[in-house]
Amino acid sequence: MLELAEEAGDEAAWAEAEQKAKEAEAALEEAEFRVMLSKEEDRLSAILTINSGAGGTESCDWAAMLTRMYLRYCEKQGWRTQLIDSTEGEGAGYKSVTVTVEGAYAYGFLKAENGVHRLVRISPFDANKRRHTSFASVFVYPQVSDDIEIELNPSDLRIDTFRAGGSGGQNVQKNDTAVRITHLPTNTVVQCQSERSQLQNKTLAMKVLRSRLYEQEMEKRRAAREAVEATKKKIEWGSQIRSYVLHPYKMVKDHRTEVEVGDAERVLDGDLEPFIRGYLLSEA
Image (cartoon, rainbow, N blue to C red):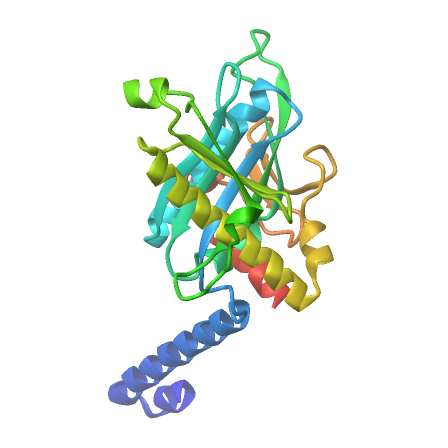
């Protein structure tokens, strides 16, 4: 249509052809989207966990940087997030973080981030300004929606309460408001300490537990648990899915898809679209 419009010199035909081209591009993007996120659990909300790895304070700070990056990405997607559990590192950052992400297809997109993430930079904690390499792992679970029932036998649960750590006011510091739940048959352990009441923390912890048990059941049904477990590599050199280099040059590279972005600050500010889309398309 574009060629015919050009030959005829017809502006109206040209405008129509341009509109049809835009519609075709939109249809292609929609088709790609359906292929990328066609699994039953892809449309669900997600639970995101980040754990620091080899590197001490450096890696704890890197885990905090990753937490901010994902919170910014989720904000740009219009998803609602809540940090429900964290263990602070010694001196800086986090040893571990758990965040709930509420939004359509949150799991479908964020599952692309499963794996070890590596950071190379001049350490802000090194008086000699030497270059350091840090590691942190990311794992994402689908969050069970309210219309999916996961039966939990009370006799299969061990519920412990303890004092929450970190900031939060007198109530958090002096009372046993934090909750840890262990599902004995599967030895699945979850905990929550973000809320000021024990009941609220228990409700959130049960939500996380149901999500993790749902994920386990989905893996059994798909007979693909080995493939998921393979993403939980050691949090160290050689296991990374993506490298974030801030010195001596700036580059973020995904080792699974070879996608590279030179603006590392933009990526750390939550611009993950090239990496997530590249991975999902390669998997599709």
